[in-house]
Length: 177
Image 1 (cartoon, rainbow, N blue to C red):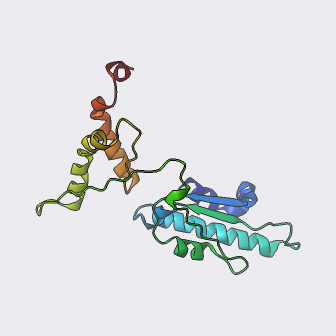
Image 2 (cartoon, one colour):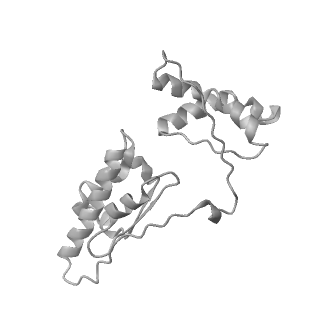
Image 3 (tube, one colour):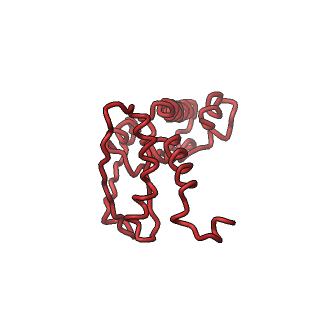
């Protein structure tokens, strides 16, 4: 969102014109209803800025191409994103790093919880937050655990519930601090 506002008047902002590497962390946000459109606009604008600078430059070697690096641990259509980021001069390279490359292997646990008929999807998501603490306690073996949430708001809600239910994680001394 901040980069969006900085790049709206990119001709007046020399810093924007100096960017040569554009890292898109968590590119799967592109499908998010509230933030995806902004990410799409920013990437498209950066591509436009690059092509405009290239066209305005008399010596095309002076303006090196803008490189895009998009990363995500959860995007199912990486090839589509690579194609979108490609340009006519240089096609994108799509690298999928599988779990064999991880220095520490992940242990994945998939649990199913029924949703009652009278419960909305929103309410169901909220009730799942209250199950996280017991799932962590059951499966973490006192080791760090990752909990994936679909949205930023979902992360905030889950963290809020977990912080109130952190008694299983912290000693009395840690809670007092």
